[in-house]
Picture 1 (spheres, rainbow over the protein chains, first blue to last red):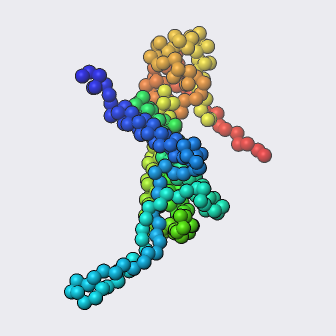
Picture 2: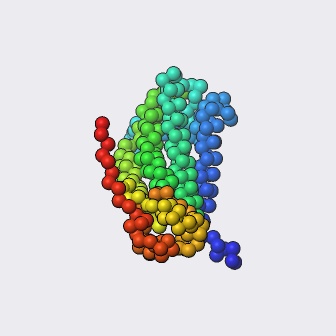
Length: 214
Length: 73
């Protein structure tokens, strides 16, 4: 029981962030193994599929009151298709690799943010609150938070609206709805962190002054 | 900084070592070293009082104001 009492909140949070960092790193490595095509014939995204649309024939259905049939027009059918690297043209391959790069960049940033947070919690656990290193790390987190939604946004847009032929069908990947809110949220979050960094920076300066007051 | 700490001069006059002074004024050796080397940003009245008492001197014997000479290009 006494051991449990020793575990402080910051220590528990630090362990949580370390576990999250390890998990995110593992997922990043899995994504990278897909990128280099270690576990398949060519590069692919593990478990990644895209919703594609293709035109279909209208279906005839009997009218409920028995006065003939009526046509049900299914202009487009949505389907989940995994893009095969071997089937792609040169331009599509480049876009696909671009997608993989930005998708993995988002993971790299996620791991980077978690790692920085874990290190800040390590310092807090040691009782080093107003330390220059903490403000530096917080500033890095703010920058990563600013870039993070941008990479996800680019990754989601880079393969949107691509038309290619596979299995005798012309497949067009859907254009995702533009969610600028996520970008705005990233900018706002980064601004909030930057503001907190400046407060922390002032605190660090005061701490330094206090340390050099004899 | 235009404020010069002449602690080493006073210590030499009183023939007192840093360790001995640290023991007398109840300040850590590290903090006293910061003060002696002029790295300190401020000094508490209580510290100044303890130093004056231990070295049997006035604050002006420890602290000195030397105006900074503006750099000419």
